Amino acid sequence: MELTIKDLCKTYSNGHRALKSVDLEITNGMFGLLGANGAGKSTLMRILVSLMEPSSGTITIDGFDLSKHRKEVRTMTGYLPQDFRFFPKLKTWEFLDYSAQLGGLKGKSKRSEAIDEMLEQVGLYEVRERYANQLSGGMKRRLGIAQALIGEPKLIIVDEPTTGLDPDERIRFRNLLTKVSNRDVIIILSTHIVGDISSTCNQMALLRRGEVVFRGAPEDLIKEAEGSVWRIQATLEQFDEVNTNYNVISTIPSVGGWDIEVIASDTGKYPAEPIQPNLEHAYVYYMEHFLEQAI
Image 1 (cartoon, rainbow, N blue to C red):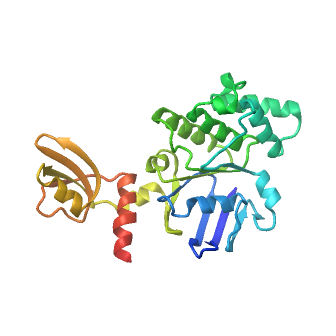
Image 2 (cartoon, rainbow, N blue to C red):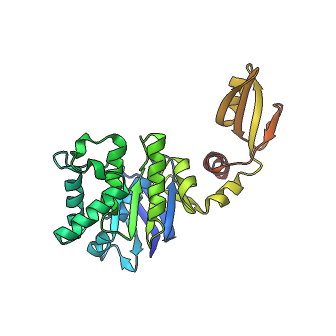
Image 3 (cartoon, rainbow, N blue to C red):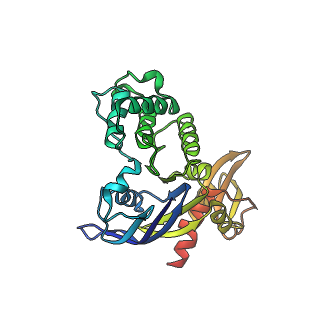
């Protein structure tokens, strides 16, 4: 399974260029698409699932040109949008049955078996008779991923899937996607939450103002920030000054002051120690420090 995106552009009628010559090659497994809100992630996702036309460029999915074979591509694609909605008058299993029919899963007994298996997998079997609008927020997101997975699609696209979930539900969701990614599938996880990428994806891309500015493994991005992440020991009097002069990642109270993690080439007069960057550090470094210098 392979997804190839070449020179993809999208300009809206108001002149806004949402995507600028996007080139990506994605193979089996979990692929993370990381970027701030407004970076163009949702536009790219909507184009991939045929809900929006690109201005130019090509997309090939498992050998099918998306512009010429929309029906074939749709049958192999599962999609969980950011603003997932459902029919409130349908029970949980009824909604999943409806989704399975839309996905081309034929035969009532075959659908029933697939629905029960999927409800077990996402932990919703015990509430299968509950109306969808009576589910908790976390359960609704699980129902959303269930409808994206029903019928075993080869391409699964999830847009901001953990937004609004509590920590336990977020971990459950990540674990489910990781389990599914062991199949012969591509899962594209589009998010602005760095932890979702670092916990699940072995390949990723950074999208900034409609352009791909990094493509590779998370550990490769982390290497970019080595030597540029510091923990400053600031006094109470220095707190505001440090926050004004540096890209601050976190602040933790300490005895007599603050431990402040910053992105910087050096820390000048402030006592500090270098720390090993994680993906969040690297993301801030790349998006706010390295790229700003390149402008």
